[in-house]
Length: 254
Length: 326
Image (cartoon, rainbow over all chains, first blue to last red; front, side, top):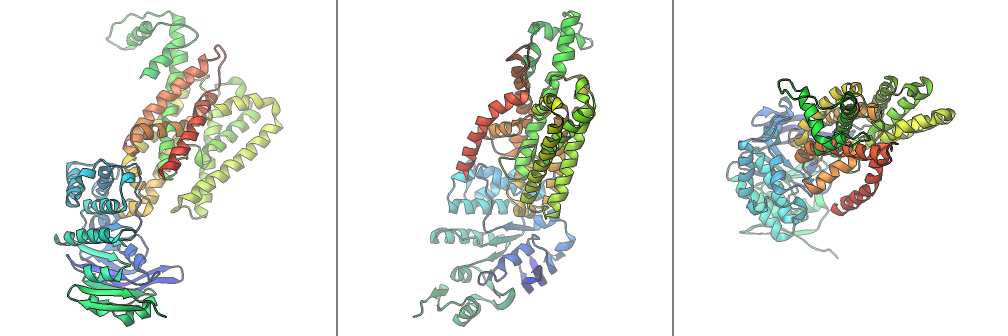
């Protein structure tokens, strides 16, 4: 469970996030959407404890500020938009690094850590990749490996910054389905997302940010309206709804 | 191990391997091995060659492990242990000592090592202050730039002092190029504690260095205090390097060749790179020292020439592979 109250992120005089308050329950998927520069990534970084903020973040009901860095890392796993993947590391070595918050500062991995790492590999069907080097993987495989590292962290909250950028359509669906399956065990998922149609289909709660403020919030059918998208993205779209979900389709004007 | 034995056995005075071994055993209590060597040979082995081998091993291991750590902390494969102004500071300190205290005449005097150590430490502290004022705590780039600035500045002052005292030029150069020709057990004793502590701290940080290789953000999201970890590693590497430099002068390339060889041959994980660099660095420098004192025997080649001669071509290869991997 993760909750924010009156969260502000400031860069000098500029407020990137204003008054963000929301609550994500175990098993829930919340998507932060909005145009470039709306404050999605800043908000997510504040949730992970990587950006200074005003207001409060609660993890499992506890004030994140009062928790140490390691305690926060045991409760929140964060995957940045462009994760650093040293090309010569093997998949197994990389995933094992996800155990860091459970290992003493100068210590080494124990049996429990190796088990958690191989569990994560199994969950994402990466066992046969274990000895491959990161540099030899495709974009889709790499994204799964990064997810496995976050999973090995065994944190109840998973924060993903644009998990599908640079993936083709099929890989996007694959990765999002994997994330969706992880929710079954009570994982709380918060993502930023670019693609509104995918956001609407996978997340059950959407928060539309513009200029750092929440301008719309709720289920896909409520948030993803043509006027909303026009007003905040400056885009001309047609919104199609059917039993499969909500589709936001760009339409060229002229 | 092999390098150790070679380092003991090779030299202008020929002493058989078996005798050295038995001589060593004779020092072990309860072993009851008869000392086979004459007093002169014994002195050559245990008072001249052994401290030399020990010192070369300590310095080589330290430089290699410090180089590997710097490369990890700054995530730059071309960093060497002299980054952050260690070399320039030590060079300036030693030059000042040679020129103004005319310490070089006595060779094994304490003044030059102390001045070099002080110069190196002062330069690194100045680099850190300069880098911090430019906001370098989070961006390691500013710290590296501050190091380059400091190196250039100290080199300028050092050259100026050196030009004013050309009669000491040879002594200054002999120090700058590095070497172990004056090694005694005393020098080993001076630098061993620093090197032992520094390399222990660094080797213990091997997993942390792997985490840091994921970048500051991800390391922080994994619960590592990035600034504090970086500071601990840099302080340990710098202190150890300064201690090594103060007894050996500037020995180029060890800190780059050795870690990269391990990376190419074994693994890029710091869990392999750090401990293996320590061992390989020690072996490499002991062997380089053997070459330095035998190639032109009985004259000595500065060891910096040997390592740079092997190192420069290697450096080019590393550059090419590092670029290919991006």
